[in-house]
Length: 136
View: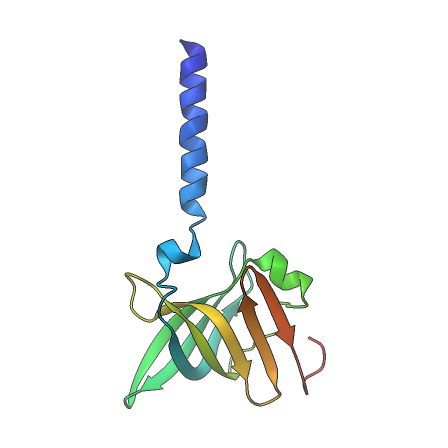
């Protein structure tokens, strides 16, 4: 009986972990693209996925967007740090909108026109290109 309880607890723990780390297509509509142009209000370089808070003006009205990125470990491997993106930076972002939350998206491409910085999520691999600003 104790073995069945332990086995059941392990299954529940595994299901909870799998649910906590969502699939991109399960949370975001990967068949749609949204483009926003705005100014970074905050950049949180946290686990498991860094995110940006961006202030956008659409149709003359201010909007606050939350943008999720690839996992922190892979971003750090390509050179991202907590200072790569800074409050006040103007960015243009293309991404997949969330299924249920307005003004939330998963970043597929992020460009910072001021210096040519560009981040792309290509399949499962992030890619980075930077011109102008020193290497993070």
